[in-house]
Each structure stands twice: as C-alpha cells, then as structure tokens.
Length: 195
Image 1: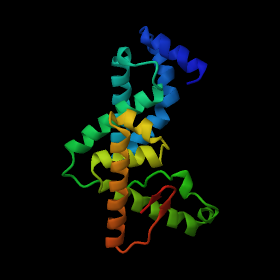
Image 2 (image 1 turned 90 degrees about the vertical axis):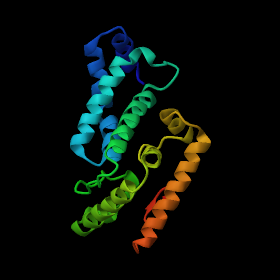
Image 3 (image 1 turned 45 degrees about the vertical axis):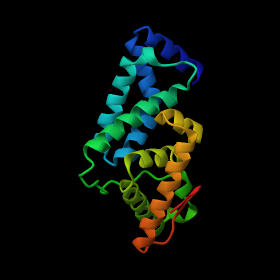
C-alpha cells in the first residue's frame, strides 16, 4: 500500500465513507478481475465485487494491519465467489465471454487478425477448462497464475496451508492436462502451468 492508501484505510476504519470510496477506486480493478475469472460472467463479477467491498467495509474492524490489505480484500472476494460457484454448481458455466488475456499469452503473433483469433480461441479454451475445476482448485489456479500470488499468499487468502495449496495446484494441473488430452487438444503453455 502506498502512503495515501494507508491514510484512506485509517480514516475508513474510523468510519469515513469517502476514504473507503478512495480504497474502492484503488482496488476495483483487481477485485473485479478476480471475480470475473472465478465466475466467468461480467454481471455476476460486478455484483460480487460490490458485495466484496460491502463486506470489507462492514468488517474493517477485523482487518489485521500486519497483513497486506490487498490479500485480505482478495480473500473476501475469493470466498464470496466460491459461495456463488457452490450455489450454482449444477448449472453449466457460460463461455460466451472470453477470459481476459494473461500477459504471458500475449505475443507479437497476436498483433494481426489471425493471431487475435488464435489468442481468443486459447482464452476460451482456458476458461472452459477452468470451469471444469472444483471451486477450491479454480480459486488456487486463478490466484497463482493470473495474480502471481505466492503459495504463502494463496494459503493466507484461502485460510489454508502451503502444502494444501501445492496439492490443489498439482491436482488441478493434472486434471486440466487430462481434460485437454481427452479432448484431443495440444498442450497450451502458461508459465508454470502446462495444460
């Protein structure tokens, strides 16, 4: 957090709603992106982001300043999204909206129309595969490979252990690889994650 954010947080903890509004402006992108990657629906992601901020504001007294604020906020967002996923588990996830591209998937080849089409197909494939994962596995994959959080940070966000996170990621990668092979797909390469 920068010095402005620390001041906003201190003022928000004293009940200053305008200060919390500044926090929302600073973190709305990461919160929305996490919700979108987990829920794969822009409307649900917007609602989840709003709910995450409401929950954060009403629980500011439980925030521990020794932890990173962003980790605490993403934890609230992630847990709320998992609740939504569990409630709708029987419903197939839509793949109409492509996953926002991970920087590692960007290349010079994606500059032309053909490259953009291939990149869009890869994004749909990744989103489709993510939709097949159990919520806890999807959460770990998104936090690791799109937010580049460390195992320790993911464990903190998910209220879990580092060994449990490593296990979830290992199982998720294996499951995704098996799905890809079963569908006759060539492996795609996201740094640290072969599918």
